[in-house]
Amino acid sequence: MSAKKKEQDFAQVVGRLEEIVNSLEDEQLPLERSIELFNEGVELALVARGKLEKGEDKVQKLIEKLGGGFELEGFKESGE
Amino acid sequence: MYFSLKDDSSSLRCVFFKQNNFRLGFEPESGMKVLGFGELSVYEPSGQYQLKVVRLKPFGVGELQLAFEQLKQRLADEGLFDPEHKRELPAFPATVGVITSDTGAAVRDIISVISRRCPPARVVLYPVRVQGEGAAGEIARAIESFGRWGEADVLIVGRGGGSIEDLWAFNEEVVARAIYNSAVPVVSAVGHETDYTIADLVADMRAPTPSAAAELVVPEVAELAAGINALAERMTRIVRDDLERAWQKVDSCERGLSPHRLAARLGEQGRQLSSLVRMMATCVNANLAANASRWNAMRRELSALNPAAVMERGFAVARGSDGALVRGAGQLSQGDSLELLLAEGRLDCRVEKVHLDTTSLASGNDLPPRFNHTQHTRHTRQHKPGVGE
Picture 1 (tube, rainbow over the protein chains, first blue to last red):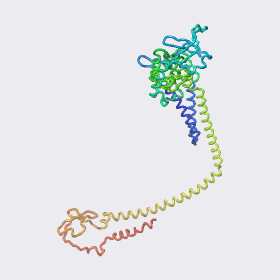
Picture 2 (cartoon, each protein chain N blue to C red; picture 1 turned 60 degrees about the vertical axis):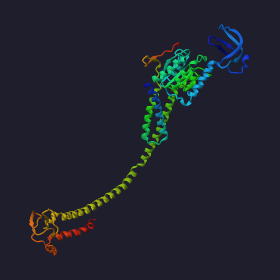
Picture 3 (tube, each protein chain N blue to C red; picture 1 turned 180 degrees about the vertical axis):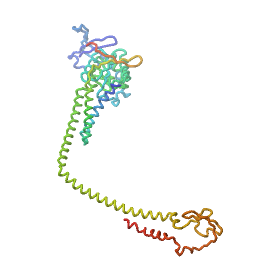
Picture 4 (cartoon, rainbow over the protein chains, first blue to last red; picture 1 turned 90 degrees about the horizontal axis):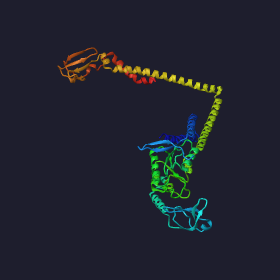
């Protein structure tokens, strides 16, 4: 389930970042609020960039066990 | 035009040259039953027999084609292809489930496209047979398994190109229903450019080839990164401008706060303040004076009303034997006993004689000396408020 969480997180992170940029652009915010939002936005941008950057080799094979559970196994392509 | 003629047990390669097929009159389709006339020859490079076709006629609708059309109609009527049922693909899937053969070019293409476009995405393969007896059942089961596993964000179901028989598993009802009922959005990727399989029609999205499916399913990470950078730049620009404006405001305020102007404003407000303080002091004093004289007057009135004070001046309270106050001589008869309460002590008495007239005090001569004084005080008090205020 953690993989699923991460996917939602990315969309949420970028969504929140867009929200921040839009309210900075469209609303007349007090300076303190602008700076608060800016700090949050910088955090979000870093988190989002981080999610795009991990690159271990991640091809796996889904194996269904007899009991009904699942297991992952590394997958090597044959014929290469 | 090159094609093969097949029946249940055999296959014959055919070649149909332009000079013969220019007046064909119909578009041959895979699976179609045809009647061909020609000359049997040998294709020398491979040593295979082939039929050089000179005439080709449709021979009814091919049996597979017919079955396909019928199933397609039935599933369409049931609503399996309805656009409302189609789900959006996730924008940034963390895990892509792939259902195909683990040996074909399809799986290689999918893995290479995903790892190039979107390195953080995980590819999880569920290997299945994609043609022949039992393939459709395996594909359908794999789709259900991914649903139960729960970690895949999107599925690619497909295989590389082939003949209509090779692709047949993707035209079977069990696969169509598994895709329709899938818990995870499905992209079909059956390498078959011209015609749609049933799987293509049910899938949430159809890709013409496995690599095309992989491109549909994962975003180009470089583009996402550029998007985030653009957002960050917009944000920085706005806040920098805000800060710039704020500094300008501070500057202009500083200029406005010159010591001379400050002193002028303080002088004016200082004068206002001290006159306010004077006014307040006057009010408070006047109030205190008014309240002091009212307080004295009230205290005097209270003491005049106090029965103890009245008795102090020589009056007595008479109470009958039943304890009731005696206000008139008529309340008692000769021989009745009564009690007189005095400022100091009390007397038990007996009535000698009853006089119903009230002459004894009428002249006022016997009034205790302070009575008049008290009446006078009460009188003057009526005018006091005017004095105190």
